[in-house]
Length: 498
Image (cartoon, rainbow, N blue to C red; front, side, top):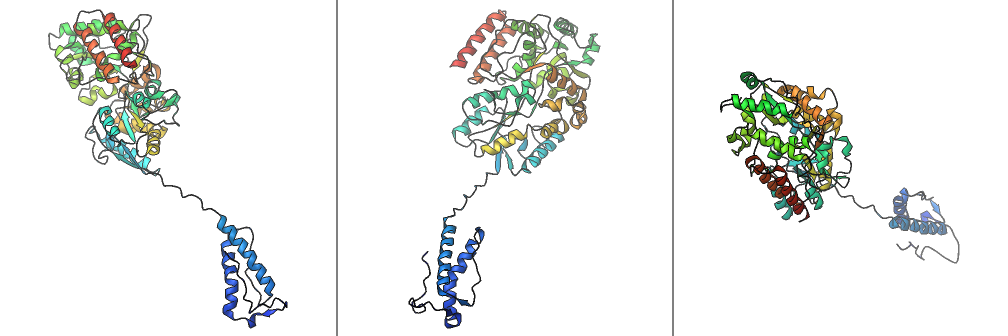
């Protein structure tokens, strides 16, 4: 800005005379001080205050001096750089969690009223934080559909899953949940999402496995309905039920290999195998241990129990028929999760009890978690920040309490909720009449050594398909259990390094 200079018509440099304001026109005076008034206004935010009052009689030299000073003040204002405009965060968070598809209607996959209330609570409370939650239903399992949308460059922000968190975390597809402490959760529930001490998913809900007993069948066949004390008693009672059932009632229902279900069969078999030996692999999924010393004992028990099972159910290929055999009073025992309490399926004469333990030195109270739903933020999504925020929200104390209060037939994964003595009497369990079963499963989660489905980082589906084929041979063929397990182990090691 150039300084305002008075016309020589008004200034005689040879004489320092005072020029009266009356001798200048009002317009000329305003022109002389107008620039200074504007500068004073712009500079009002600065520590230096520019005098705005000009006396009626003004010395020309003083006015010029003030004009120069005002010019400097304006230069200071011009030098100030405006702060960068903060970009508004993306509000929408897209998840493939089916509960939020038509969330305001009764859920098709879970037509219980508590499903609606649970989804409503989650959506409303998360959106109070400034996000908008969107849901899409892509069925189950989600691994293949997710790979397709990932390749197309249009993945969701949050992906539900169970056994493949490490696979996608290894590929860099999942983002870390930095504010989640794994020690706050049941170890078996969170372990499948922890890789190199970083958490890539939050388990919303879970279940353990227990032995379900049909007391009506036991009474009809003259068998003690009390929980069997050990594996010998379990097998003896199952054989007795098969013998006395005359082809109409069976003992222990074993679920055999079904190509369409890679995980369900393994989840039902695993608790007995784990009780005989350690898990099928390390909890980080890096090392398989299918042929660990002692594991064969669990497979051998399943082979003998299979002989007391209805073959049409075991090998019929229908997952629903497996549980229905006991609920329809056609079997004495089977393993079940909290999703499969008899009362939920019109059978009120069954109860859940911890699975008996074998007596070998390697035997221990071990269990596998199932229906263990992880929610993982997708780093390649449009809104990874929102994805992380939603996943971490699902692990908060108040959010976890909504599982027993509103959802009902699932268990929370946060230890602080499970350890509260009031949890198993919550409204969700009471409404369904399954408080006793909820107490059994809560005790199992807190006091047994729980493990996740081993989260193989590569070739997970191929490993479980290969395992299922070997399991089928053990049940159907007169082969050495240990030799089959050795073959499974060798192939798993090859697939993990392929």
